[in-house]
Structures are given as structure tokens and as C-alpha cells.
View (cartoon, rainbow, N blue to C red):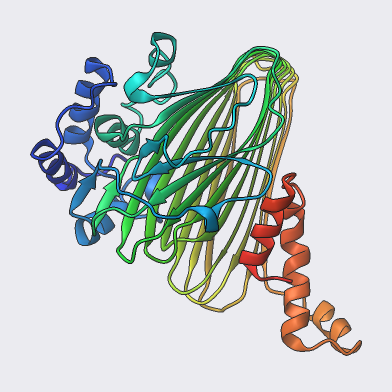
Length: 423
């Protein structure tokens, strides 16, 4: 069901039109289509099937009155940096050359959108369709000065890239960070995308990333969401994977009052792979909503998904994952799993795994499980002198470990462990 049109989008359009003006690195046609789409469809409410448990329109109306496109100075980013990585910094949606590391890595090229080359400009909105989702349209119309990161053909980056997205904008602001990540043939990279809110005010992050993997390339991505209880956001990843390429992403949600993740992967050629993993630990009235799409378009491709949630108090988790196998995608191998632990009688999880298959020679499966901490396991640990809280942490750490162990960057794994406080 399409959401009823609201005036939230129009209010945002009027505010930005009076203060910021045209985003000059966007194609005029894309901007026009984005604005028309916003005016026609509005911001989704929970009457829209894809946002059934996530009424973002109501939150935007109540909490957020401005769109921020301005860069604000940051005095010190050292506390947020990770060891043995190259740090790039984006503040309120704008790439900061001053705060970013100047280390030169062979094969790494970065252009801001204001200086983007024609080859990069052609990639904008090529897989993020402005007429498919209101938040893509909103970002297209009001994007900050993001960046195009390109890895040259036959190059493997020797260090992970740590992208810090920092919000310290005006109170009650919507920030629209955006990037393009492009791996050319036979290239490899590890990229950490880390979101933080260092202000005392509430902020709404509307992030869009378009990721392109050329033939025989490999991209390991980590999404770390830690915007505090003042953080709200929609995070959209549109990914295109080509022949013999390998894409993986681990999404770790550490904080945020409302977090919506849209992760859409197109396996566009034969013999490619995609792996999505997610972990969230929430309490209070938090909401984390993970939506994924694995679009198998060609034969002999593989995809795997594993999402885990630890849900306490009156918080709500959502997982909606779809495996879409097209007619030409014979010999597809796809697996999807959602596993959750409820720590409270008032905690809620809504899961909806989906298969839509039009090929006849495939191996596809999905599964979901939800329960409480195993009482027998707790009793076993008690009999060996382990206290209740320590036993609980041990069991939760074992549950989360299946995802955490897939983090290959040591400093990042240590950071996640410390923030989750399960050991």
C-alpha cells in the first residue's frame, strides 16, 4: 500500500529552498524527478508496507524542522579514530579535507562531489533510483558535499579506510551525507563507515551510498552506527556486484533512537557473491529496522545473510529480508537467517523473511528464531560459581560472537566489543 501523501516533504522542501539553493553537482533531471517524487509520495508512514513498523513521517514532523548542508568545525577527532586505518572525515554531510588523513595509498583516489570528474558524475543515481524511495529522493535533492572514492584497477589497499560521519549540526536538523564507492577490475579494499553524533541535540541522518564492484573485485565493508540516543536515521546502501566480484557488509548498531537500514544488493553478473551480516543491541524505546534485498539476476551466484538482535525493555527490532531470484539466475545459492534474543517481556521483534523465485534450479532457504536466554545454560553456569549477570553476559557474548568474529579489522573488533559491553 502506498503511503498517503503528507506535507512533511513539502515543509522540508520549503525550508531548504529558502536557505541553501541548488545542489550543483546533481543532474538537473535527477533533482527535478526527486522533488516531484517527494511532493507526490511524501515521507512514508506506517501505512506503507515497507515502513509498517517504522513511522518516520511522524518523527520528522514532531522532532525535526531544518535541513543542514553546512560544515561545522570540529576541534579534535582523535578520540574517534581507529588504529592502523586511514581516516576520512565527513561533517554534517560534507567531506573535510582538513580533518581527513593525508596519507597517500597507491590506487586510492578521492574527489569531493564539488570537484567530481565526469566518470564519477555518471555514477550518481545510476543505481539509487530517485523514484524508488522517498529518502533517496530527499538525499538527491539536498545532499551535502560528499565524495567519490575509487580504487584503481589491479590495486589492493594495504590499510582499511575509516570514514567518520560526524553530526554536530543545528538542533532538530536533517543531514544528508552521500558517497560513491567504486572498485575497478581486480581491486580490493576494506572500508569502515562509522556514524557518530557529538552534539547534545537530536539529529536525523539520511545517508545514501552507491557502491560499484567491477569484475573480480573485493569489498569488505563495516557499518558502525553509534549516534547516541539523540540519533535518528535512514541508511541506504545500493550495491552492484559484477562477475567474480565479492561484496560483504557487517552492520553493527550500537546506539540510536531510531535506525532504519535499507541494504539492496544487485548480483548483476555470473559467479559473484554477496554476504550481509548484522548485529544490534537495543533497550529503552529504541527501534532498529533492517530491510535487505538480494537481487539475483544472473546464474551461479551466492548470497548469505545473518542478522542477530538483542532486544531489551520496550524496544523493537525488525528484520525484513527478501531473496529475489530472476528467471536467468539458475544455479543460485542463497541463504538468509534472523536470530533474536528477547531480554524483556515487553521487547518486540518482527521478522519477515521472503523468497521470490522465478528460476527452477536453485538452492534457497531462510529461517528465523526468537527466544529468551536458555535457562538450562544459565543454571549450568550458576552451578560452576558464575553469578547471574556474568552468566548472562557470557551467553549473550556467545550469541553475538558469530557476527563479531566476522570483523577482520582488529581495532574495530575491540571497539565493538567494548561498546557492546558483553565481556
